[in-house]
Image (cartoon, rainbow, N blue to C red; front, side, top):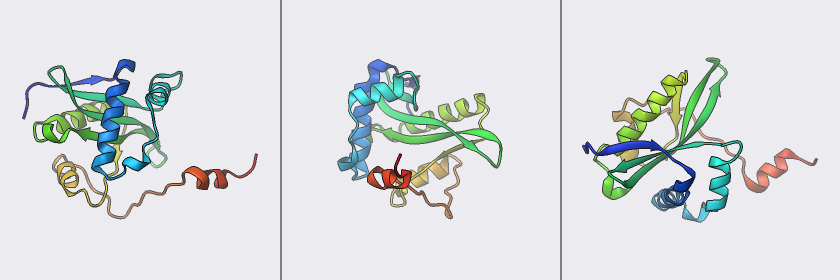
Length: 162
């Protein structure tokens, strides 16, 4: 494990770095064709008047080696906010050095400090290395839950006219 792991909150100047990590994650997941975001949109949604998410960057010295994109959700059953991790990615050459663990621990601390009762994320069912890593950090992989998504034209149809 690297002792040089540092975690910091991203700033607007980090938008190109964040976009690079998003593209790297998409390549890893064979989903690069789905990436349509650009720097201008990231700047607006992450650092505009109403930020939709927050970003942490893991650094080894001055070099960015990983990223975590997260936002708050809410549990009606608990009546408490939660923290949802949208993306966690560490450069392949920097894995096994503690950067992913450091990002998860930092996010867990944020969740506790902000009064969150849950810290959740999704993982692709084929990504066994990630599943093993998450379990080693104490995560339960929820076997009975499936993500439902309505996007693009299907979302517009569901919204209906007006």
